[in-house]
Image (cartoon, rainbow, N blue to C red; front, top):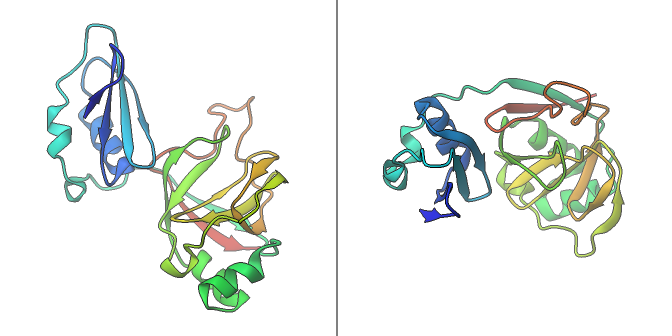
Length: 194
């Protein structure tokens, strides 16, 4: 655990989504925001009201409460430009990539990179492929990609280095909506072919 300025603590953990859920479940006074990352959870508190978080350093993910996030289904057309490359890297055919990707239930571990972009964990081992050797300067909105331990959907056009396997019409970010992001940490996501 590391102090981050006067009003925040950064806690390292193997399961940021589960630790975030536990901190939220405890409803400790003085906590203003709990932000999971890839291997950390940032806890921001009200000035002068920091609760004792030392328990979190010894907390284990197997103590996690049952998942409380929403369950969402995202329809995907599996026609991405890297689909065949991913199949070769995974040692399966294209249909095998689709079966593996649609056969898993993913958890939104954290958000970032761009508004509405969720990093989803639970990717089957064969699909844990490296990022592209050369990132694209523009990935279209709705592109479904994967890299390393994560899969996700680009909420708007942006540069990107993930392997693109499909696309969806699902809106991931709408600044006029409440909340504007479709995905929140702890939500569970299933992909289905469409």
